[in-house]
Each structure stands twice: as C-alpha cells, then as structure tokens.
Image (cartoon, rainbow, N blue to C red):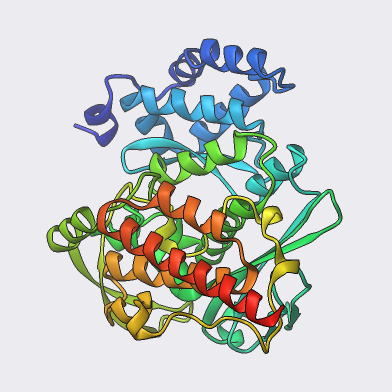
Length: 394
C-alpha cells in the first residue's frame, strides 16, 4: 500500500485536487466578503492547485487532514496575502501532518504596512564579522557588512534587529539576541522532531526564521491599527508550530514542563559549529514573553523624556532589595529562570524610561502566581526608588 493511500482514500489526480480546493471556497469567500478584501478565490485556488501538483506530499496531507487545509486557506483570506510564489509572501506547506499557511517575514512586513501601523520595516541578521553598534530604540543603528560574503564567512550568528518607520515619522528599533532567537527555536514543536530532516523551516531556512522571529517580537512595539498581524502571528506560533502561543505561565507549569519534557540540545551556527550545549524544555503554548522582547504593548506611551539624567538615574535594586537577577539560574533552558531574567530586563529598562504602568500591565497580562507577585513587588520598589530620586534631584 502506498503512502498516499494510507493517508487518504483520495487518489492523487487533478480532478481530486480541484475538488478538494473547491471545498475551501465557501469559508474563503465569507472572509473576503466580511473584510472587503480584494483577494480572488479563483486566482488563489489556482496557486494552491499548482502547489499541490508540484508537491505530492502537500496534496496527501491536505486530503488526509482537510480541516487543516481549509484553515490554511482561511488564513490566506484573512491575511490578504497572495499565494503567488513569485511574490514570496505566503505558501501552503505540509508540516507535522497538517497543511500550514506559512507566512514569510516579507508577508508579515506587508501586513504591517498594509494596515498602516508602519510605513516601512527593515530587518537584518547580524554576524560576528559585522560591525554593529546599537544606538538605542529610537536611533538608527550602525551596521556595516559585505552583503556578498557567504554567511559562513561573516562569522557566528549574533542576533537580528528590526527597524520600523512609523507614520508619525518616528523610528522604533528592536534588537533580538541570538540567545532569544535560539530560545524561540527550541520552543518550536517542529524543531523538536526526532528526525533532523523533518525539523521544518528552522532547520532549512534559519536566517529567514530568525528575522521572522525578530519581526514577531518587534511588532509588539508598533501601533495597533488592525488585529490581522497579531492573528497571523498567533496562528504561526500555535498552529504552524513555529513557537509558542499566548497565555500566562506559572512557576508550577514551567517546572512541570521542564521536568517532563527536558531534552538535550546543541546550538549550532550556520557553518555547523557547535556553539553551546544546553538543556532546553519543549514548553508548548506558553507566554511569548519567554523569548525575550515582548514586554511593552505600545512603545509610544513610554515617557522617555521623563527619564532622569545619568547622574541622578536610580539604579536597579540591590540584592537586599530583592533584585530579580539574584534568582536567575545558570541553566538557560529553565523557563522560570528565563522569565525571571526577562522580569529583570524589563525592570532595568523601566528604571531608565519611567514607564511603570506599562511594566505593571505586562506583569498582570503575562504572569501568574509567584512570578507575577515577584514582578509586581519589584516594579513597585523600583517606582518608589524613581520617585525618591526625582524628588532628590528637583
């Protein structure tokens, strides 16, 4: 019995492929009618048909899991991104027994610009051989590199940064370290596959996935003009197994996941060199603050002009005052330690910009139980220190 017959009773023929695609039409049409979209089902169905004709595994997966195929087509309709392969915005791909609407990082950029949240998005990967200077969240970074060099010749991967030019004329720059990118990758169910040949785009298109992760992170800082981008990111993280979903994480659930699903992981750069060895947990469907830079929902409300001068700037709480960094473990794979490190990062940033309300709101939305209590207590102490420093310097 062939693999195709095992997966589906439907034979691989042009007519069967067309019939399968036609069954996705009603829900597709409802979405584009409700959103006043200019997408055309006949055109997108033709792209889907050609994708199936050139990839038998895609057809087999769609026939064997029709619900996932229909959901993928719904995502294409709601995103407004065409399956036209020449545009490189979205693709139908078989992954983990499902058909996924794989939105590229270029697709995410287009959604952001189409929604008028930003005028332009620029994202780049940074390697050890590059000259890179980060000049803050609202200033152009200095990045000098030879674009014609092979990636292996540019050195090990250091991270990515995303520049968003807002309609107001402001610039928002968000860097994401290699550590945080690797953390996102490690929490991808696709990457956890035991067969190295089935680990999805993280294994086959690392840099593109790293940039996509950077855009997902940076979008948290952009104005919220449409729910489309957030919905697509949620779909990619959860349904497409690219990362983890939303929802608060507690110390208990994090510890449980770590004890139950700990695996050994070698982090390897693009040249195949092992960079480090760590224990990493496959925490699924947890808070997206785990990978790092998803703290504040709207950077435009941060009163940076109120930050005190260097001489009068309050410092992070000392160990006796409950500095969260004292609780960070050396094991990078421990999600509780990662969250505590993130809490401390937010604390340090908020000490500088004074956005205590935003920090508190982040803790309430993204943490629970002991972690939330720790964060709220730390932020309260930090706000008190800031107020005392401002009074002293007045």
